[in-house]
Figure 1 (tube, rainbow, N blue to C red):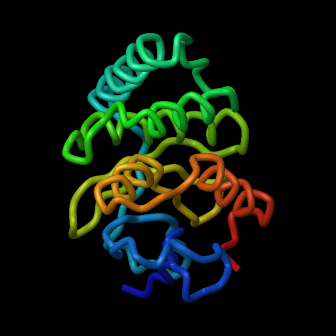
Figure 2 (tube, rainbow, N blue to C red):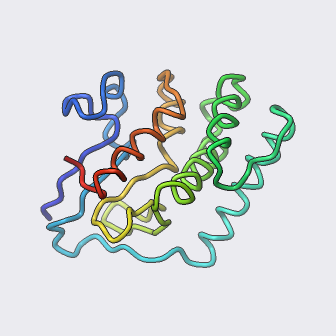
Length: 177
């Protein structure tokens, strides 16, 4: 398999700036599948993915209403502020992976609504992951784990910074470089 991996956390490329290199490779950021040999499969979300994501969005909405005093919008950029407030208030602990990944689903929804990404499922030898695909490109972004991996490793970050990286990628037509 010839896949060129570029993780949003990869400081060595210089593309995404400093402070992202301390997240392990499993943190998944972005991946370019051009040149893939076929061992990785991309498919639409199935009914169970949709159901799980609805539940995760509901969990974030409940947290937002309780701790921020407002519901999530379902894709508006104001959701970035809400996510940041939840993180700044330390509403979730680092071992609450399901809930932290739910924040990533909401982040992904903003990328879908604002930047032209779409939700897909990626199946490979490691397993099955929900990801975002930019337009018809071979580039994938994995927002479900963007937040959780950073919180688990106690890395300081801004949700708007993660969004800005995906925005830059979109402005390049989904091309990593």
